[in-house]
Amino acid sequence: MKNIDILIIGAGISGATLAERYASAGKKVLIIEKRNHIAGNCYDYYDETGVLVSKYGAHLFHTNDEKVWEYVNRFADWYPWEHRVVARVDDKTVPIPVNITTVNTLFNENIQTEEEMQNWLEANRVAFEQPENGEEAVLNRVGTVLYEKMFKHYTKKQWDKFPEELHASVLERIPVRHNHDDRYFSDAHQALPKGGYTKLFENILNHPNITVLLNTDYFEVKDQYQGYEKLFYTGPVDRFFAFQDELMEKLEYRSINFVTEHLDQEYFQENSVVNYPGRDVDFTRIVEYKHFGNQQSAKTSIVKEFTVDEGEPYYPVPNEKNQLIYEKYKKKADQLEDVYFVGRLANYKYFNMDQAFRNALDLFETVEAGNLQLS
Ligand code: UDP
Image: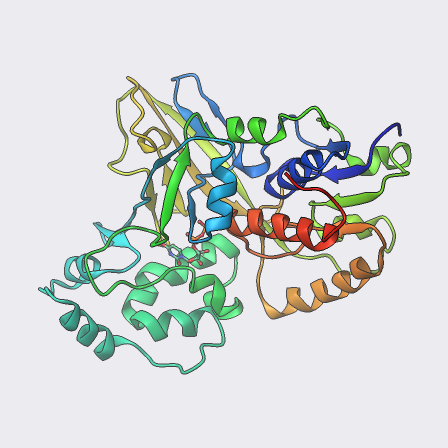
């Protein structure tokens, strides 16, 4: 391997951010990417109807982290986009996260004020001081009826586990609102990159010190790429060690089967994302991409998401069993010199996009504290 200081496996958020940081500090970087494109699961492209669509599910950027916001603004212009989601429940359409409208619509209530909403929740919730799993987390917030209607079966479809088999943190991603706010997120910055995520990644990686090798499985070419200063691995942590220790137990991941339909009509649904939390259909949600950024086209495409066991790993499955297995891998990972594990799959953490940027930025600073001249 000639002239490479930093080897990075994977061209998603973590890999691209580290590549940019090292390249800007004068290091020669090679990224090895298994897929035929950059941008990891953020990858998007224009489909045959001229609409910008995401290959691996909708990606809504939101952050309260000023450092990350400043960083991503270096590489794209962003336009404000507040994500909203509705759910089809009992032949009705309601906002998720649960807010006043959700309760009024499903239960024919006439709640008007935050105080009335708090009273309704108080009367319905099943209090847990310290929710120990996803079921307790939801019951603690909204009670049994909403749990059954909106969370229990959606979660079973998404994870092939009921909420009680998952960490509370998974379900705590969805807040409950005491007002009419129907935004999915409440962060200070909620935006999408103009021209899409792939363009954002092209800009992040656009540096003479960065080379990207696509269509290449690192584990198949590993021997050709030795002699680096540092290796950053962003793939599934257990895959890294599968080649060294066959006795180690595999970690669980969830993948998504995206089923696209092209329709000869202008719109299919009223909103970008419609969740289907019921047992009557097998998919979790339908995404109609043209709503993002209010894109115009005569036809439309929709994508149904079926979450499955096999396939590209997208989600770690946060529960105690997997956490214990992960700890064993982490121990092995920590023993390696000049090899760093970074990102959602390598850290086995359910990071949001901004957390993935932040972790990569922080890792760079920790590893290189005082070593490099940063720009
Ligand atoms: N969830 C649910 N019903 C919904 C939306 C979410 O039960 O209508 C639960 C489900 O367990 C899901 C978790 O909340 O996995 C987190 O949802 P989020 O939308 O953050 O998932 P992501 O967008 O990362 O797939």
